[in-house]
Each structure stands twice: as structure tokens, then as C-alpha cells.
Image 1 (tube, rainbow, N blue to C red):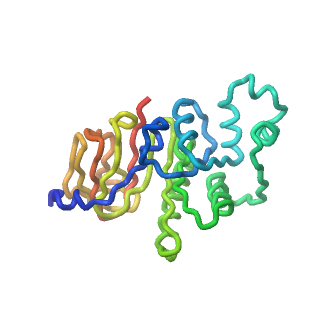
Image 2 (cartoon, rainbow, N blue to C red):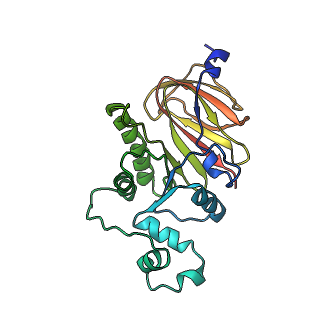
Length: 251
């Protein structure tokens, strides 16, 4: 059945894109934690925007090195090693973790919970996609882990932590079942996007795309909606399972 106007009007609203807007243009952005992971940082303008918008910043291991490498060379040359720069120049606390079983992403999420107990900052993971494919799958796995934990928790005491994966090229996050209206400002996003059926066979309907679909069955091995294009600053996705929504970031 086509998407009814009443469904669209009552849809859950999702805004993950305001983190990319310049400070001052992002009145709707919520306080969030920026986690820097182990991928090269090449878009310094985007880094500056998300860094300025973030309330909390955390790096682990490789992400710390990547952030240091993005600094001006004259600044880096003043310090004999990376740890000295963070501790002496910035006054940043440095924590040692003996955990050899968790990824950098997992360590950062654990430390965030320890430093801010009771808070559920939305998380933006810079470097969560791009690079090795196995690491990308682990980032997507992490999204599902937190979705599952949110369902198992007492939601009256703890709300779900939103996690968004960010790279120089893409903004990626989960969209749950039901009808969702998603903020997609074309000043910073698009036009290319994809809706990936990561939960298994899924039926989706859309509004606001170049190629809208209605009650469209999608699954790996049959058909998948990739390389679509947004044609509006808000789009609508209706699905019967959780899907992965990934959007191109404008250079």
C-alpha cells in the first residue's frame, strides 16, 4: 500500500545530519560524543565542524594517532611523542586499558559510560566506515549490539544510545521498523544514498527519493536499494525490519 499522509505526519523524526552543519547553523543538534577511530582524516573542514559541535571527544589507540597526524606539522614537532602532546599541550587525561579483546570502538564506548554514568550521549564514530571491510562490519555489528541492549534494558531508567558512523564520504545509521521521517539537508548530504536490508528480508516503502518504492521486498541475494538519490531535505522510510541507511556527504 502507498504511504498514507497520516503515516508521514505521525512518523518518528530522525536528525543525524545536523552534526555536519557549521556551528550557529545547527540549532537542533543534541549534545553528542565524538569518537575518533583509526582511519585517515583527510577532510579537515568536516573534522572542524563535528569537533566544534561535539560535547565530548574520545580517541583510542589508532584514532589518537590519526588525530595527531591531522595537526599542523609545526605543532606536532614541539612534542617528542603523541602521548606528550595530548597530556602536556592539551591537558587531556590518558587512560590505560589492559583489555585486548575489545576493539578501539568498544573501548571508547566503555570509557564513555564510565566517565558519564547515567548519561546516554548520542555517539558519532568518525572513521566508523571506510578502510578494512571486516572493521566496517564490526562497526555495523556495534550498532546492532546497542539496539539489542536498549531493548533488554529498563527503558524507564536508560534510553537507547544513538550511534552514527561517519567517514569522509558517508553518514550511516540504523533506521528501525515503522515509518521514519529523516532530516537530509542537501546542503551537506547527497544526493546518493542506500537502504541496506541488514536484518534479513525486509519490505520497504519510501518518499522523497529519485526512485521511490512501495512495498518493495529487499534482501541480500535478491535486490537491494543502493545508488538511489535524495530529492528533498526530508525523506521518509517505512520498513518492517531495521535497515541500514547510508548517505553520501557533499565535499
